[in-house]
Length: 399
Image (cartoon, rainbow, N blue to C red; front, top):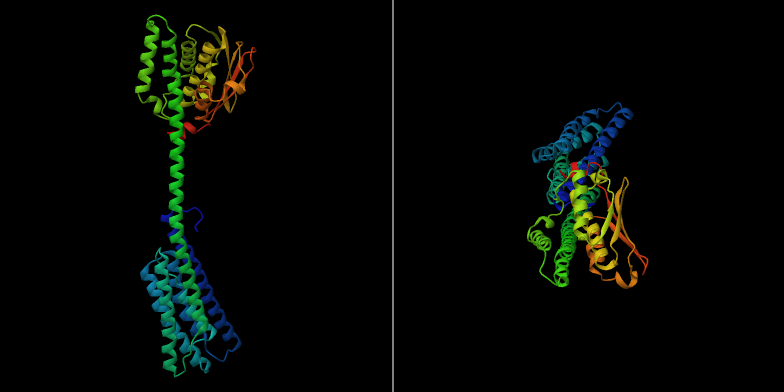
């Protein structure tokens, strides 16, 4: 199975690799024949066998062209000229050495193997099997007619048949493997796509749940606890929350509006004051520059999580004071929200508590952040919020 290659690339890549391996092996066969001819000429100088080297030149040239610029025309030319070379070599070897030559002599076998290993010029393994079979047939026919011309007997060349069978068998196995792996890879891609969509869906659901908690549930709490007509500020807050829910801005992941550092500090202060609703005094001394490292989405979720912490102080802590301590490093921006209220037992109150589990912890997890809560009855509550900063170049890469 190809190592992670897409199905549309796996066939071409595998076929190209097999073809190059076959061409390299064919070149070795031709070079081997040349070495044998040179050795015979050097050992038996009284015989003139060097003309046999001439048959190797066109085959090597065409093989180099086939490797450099594969095409059906070059492959066909290689097979035709290769067949003529086998015929010519058989005649030269028999006439110059004055000995009968058989079609299974090792030098002739090497030439025929070089024809079998042409593999082909196309990107498909099925076509390569056809080219290999054509090379086998042309090599055998060329040697047959040469022996027929010389009047020598023809016999079955077992070695060439075995090589042809191995090459065709290898191509067939690769073909079957590619067909099966293509189906498997399609299933893997589909599973990866479904998992990605599920992650996106979970992110949207977590964001929607947190937003509903921060808006609808908060406003319902205001309405149910107000004994008289709602104030103008409360009505304006409800309208703003409804506009936010009806709109799509909160739904667009990664498209949050960027703001300058000073403006971000003002937006954080405004969100905290709105969550405090005049019932809690919040001590905040933000460093405006620390927000530069956060992208728009991370800053918005970070701000909403801090505001929710203040809203929890107002509703549950039984105190009118809280403190927000901001900090930053090269890898993250953090906020510690501290109150000296009544506190609560973590094992009794955090499990299934929507405000903490979804509107704070779950909200930060959607942007890669985290939240840790420390609290004891009668000793107040502390919440540490942490958000990773964007790496240098993320903004450029995103654009």
